Image 1 (cartoon, rainbow, N blue to C red):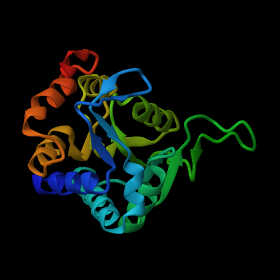
Image 2: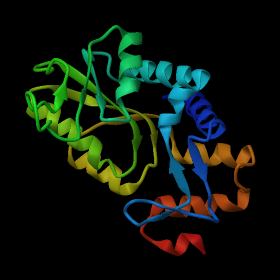
Image 3: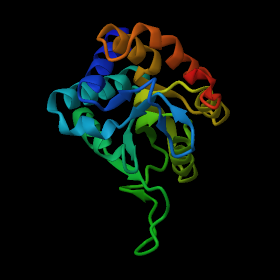
Image 4: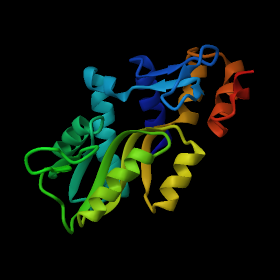
Length: 213
């Protein structure tokens, strides 16, 4: 995707506080990792102008990288609304994949018509270590779908996530990324220029707490 769009998306995420950067007061992720960044792209749904940028961007991303897409599938729950918007823009069928099969009714894990033999793109809001995204892809593959790849709003670009995607033969294209966001954040005074190296050090090895020093 174009650098201009990556910058525009980064500016929007910072503006609505969907992304927080706190190099000197790190967040604690569920894994216990201390992180200078926290991302909640669900907030994009509440801001119309930002939402338009994101959904039109995801639609264009699919047209550019996955032109043979026949079905859009969202991840549960963060990707569902985005998949709905994007499928409407593209005029394509939409569904979503649950985190696990229902324990009642028909026990569905894939909601919507199961896309057997169809070219599918998965919509994800955020790629970190990529584990949950890959699980969704595998569920769809096992159901007989041809998964072209993932279209996501933002990626941390963590090596663990990149390695997992490669090992699982899964392609991901994101609207914006960690490096662009940090650059924009420094230019617009969300963080100081002195913090750039510290934040990028975290990205290279998030398990090493020395980035905080």
